[in-house]
Amino acid sequence: METSHPQPAAAVRTPLPTSPETPVFQRLSGVLGAETDTLDLSRPLDPATVEAVRTAFRENHLLVIRNQSLDKERMYRFAELFGPIEGHMIRLADGSKWDAVHTITNLDAVGNPVAKPFISSNYFWHTDKSFLPEPSLLTMLQAVELPPDGGDTQFADMTKAYDALPEDTKRRIGGLKTVQSLEFMRRYTGSAPPTEEDIAAAPPIAHPLVRTHPETGRKSLYIGMYSSHIEGMPEEEGRALLEELLAHATQDRFIHTHKWRHGDLVFWDNRCLLHRAIANYEMGKHRRVLMRVVVKGDTPR
Image 1: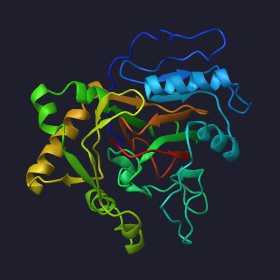
Image 2: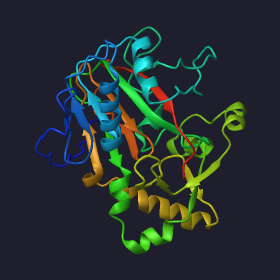
Image 3: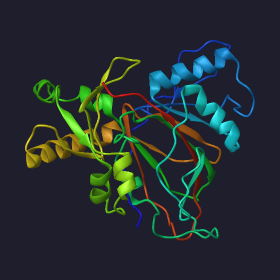
Image 4: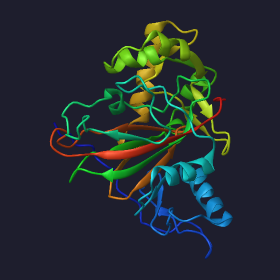
């Protein structure tokens, strides 16, 4: 069933500050992000270009590089410019784990579209791997095959959401920690329960509810579908606060909806953004194939 998700009005597409030697990034929307169509990532990048991309990522947290067609090796090498590549916990039907660069798709084993999503948790607001001691820093997706319409991805700016909170709420939540739990997420989203091996590899862990970005120093809410409860607070009270904060943080004014184009390479900062997939296309009829790679992060502070 298709759903409608209003998009805030986009700002005027003014170029971001740049020099003649660097790629030209333009604002993606009035909420967050930047885009460029002046890069060919199939070629080696000079140091100045690499630094320009890193700077744009640090300042905008969501980048879209248009018109790319990278193989797995080139995508891996580009992602590696931002840090070490992260391994994955999800296992395939044969028991093997996802490759570092893997496919996100609605296709079955013989290549036919299926109506039911393989991973239902993708459709809930989350930041990747927040249940680990060192959650994901950056997630990168490349569009390979797309439906004629829909299949969007939404992003919510947790820094803007934090900044917009009343001062008394900021004081209230400033020293709190949320317990992030893979097991809770599986129950919350109606997904398959984790195996004993999964739980042993990723037991619940407490992270700051308000996270400080290690590069910008700005504060953001660090919550999502893995947030089980608040440490030291009665469970019901903590759950109510988490749901209240999530409802605040996912208002339209904090959300950018990315409408995919063929060749889009999209990557974002998990330290200060939430994201989710939108099932607003006929999943059982149209093919949707994305390539994915993730960069490992550091301990939230």
